[in-house]
Image (cartoon, rainbow, N blue to C red; front, side):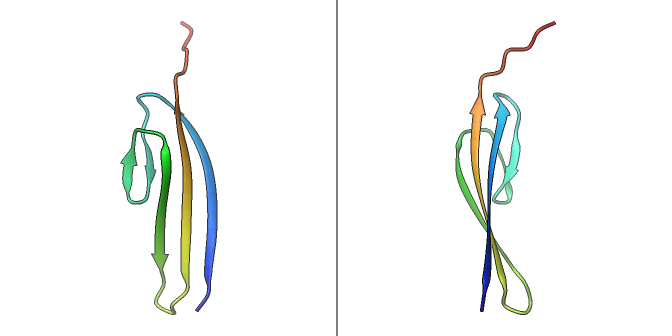
Length: 58
C-alpha cells in the first residue's frame, strides 16, 4: 500500500472561509484529510491555513 502526501499552504482574509479536511474553516491551523481509493492507495492532504487581517481600500 502506498500513500501520496500533498502539503498546501493557504492564506485567506479574516471572515473568508476555506474548505479543508471536509469542513469550511475560518481559523488558522493545520488540517489533515485522508482520501482512500478502492485499490488501497491513500492520498493525504495537509493544509496549513493562515487567516490574516486584510485591509480593503474603497
